[in-house]
Length: 134
Image (cartoon, rainbow, N blue to C red; front, side):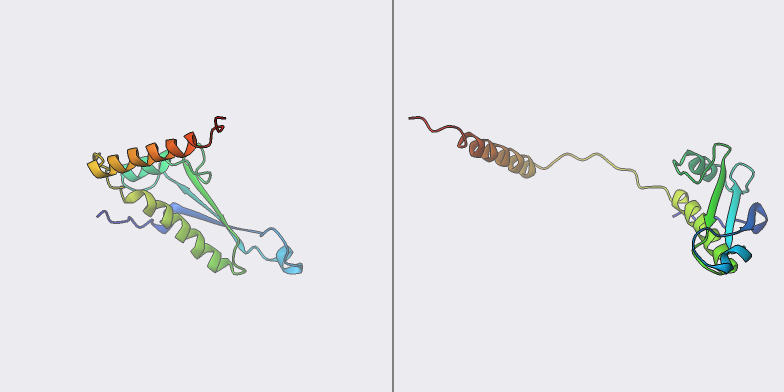
């Protein structure tokens, strides 16, 4: 099993921004939402993980290979920072573990026989739906 690499804090750029949506006066005064930017190509991650991250079809990854995560779920800026880091860590973890390779297997004789029996039964049912001869 592959170990999930830890992302160093100095490679991540966190910016506080004002959150969207309802919140009364507080939303206009406090910058509680967080924008996280992480440059995949400039990071210290292993090359294989960088390639898999860049190959992901994720809308949070820009054309330049920068991960942009916006978090505004919590009212506290600190919790939003933790959430953003956790989302980035989860993204890296999802590509660090390789999926198991699938080995082709043949269907068993009984499963083939069952499939063909069901197919012929279905054909008989459909044949009985026709017009009744007079």
